[in-house]
Length: 113
Image 1: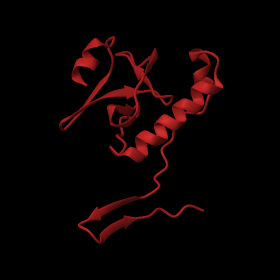
Image 2: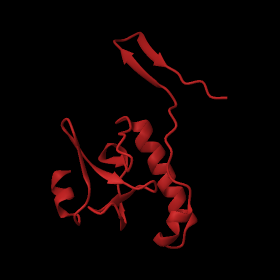
Image 3: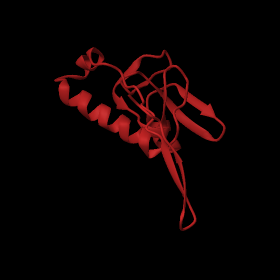
């Protein structure tokens, strides 16, 4: 990851604890040092931090939602410049589950109307 980041044009890095990630726009485009989107460069999952600086959980759920959003948004546009006309990414917490041992499960559900 660090080697790949060094190959990118100058961009905004977020350092939190041991994690280095890329600042992204609401459309998941990597932001440069002036907080402008770099055309054609995207980051999803725990490699990205939304422009507001609030990191999302480093889970497959978040990465999956980002990938689904980005795929659909790119398929709706004929050029990258049209991407900004699409609604930005919003994460929806669908709850989480953890298996502990053979028969124990911890479950956290979010009820959505």
